[in-house]
Length: 194
Image 1 (cartoon, rainbow, N blue to C red):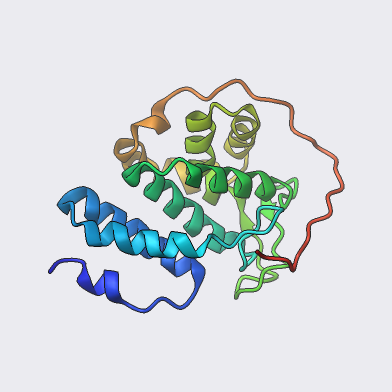
Image 2 (cartoon, one colour):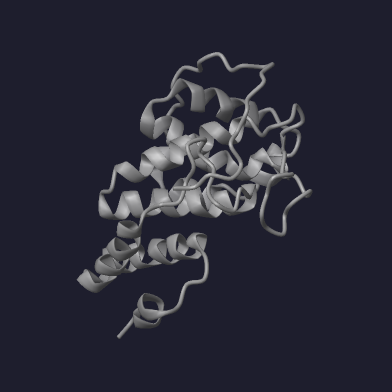
């Protein structure tokens, strides 16, 4: 049966289960096999590991791209609006990792990207989607900031068309921006996960 290997396969880390769940949600939307949803629900019942700051256990900006995309996809396909709250919390925290040039600090990452900052432009479609979906001025302001980053045209505009075609919400107008803090000091707890 199609998808059984994915449904029954072993998963090593939390971010893998969400990516697999995203695929299972897509399979469910096509074939309506309830076993796919049951597997997703098993993992969701174990909880989503995120600390109070909005960091996933890996504390990796690279991994959070994957996790946030997966949660959006599951929320869309299975009508699970609570997952959007997880994504929003993660994206707000993400902003406080951003340098003036758009690079995200990675010093506290627990994965292979530690000390290798990535650009906020990798999050553009996620920020845009969530700003529109949640009608959120803070996320809209970050989305507009990303549009001003040097690599935006090369990294996003040159590759974005299929995503805009697949998710029509991305073509909607952004809400009005709220002011963003430009200078801030924020203490993040790096070790506690519930």
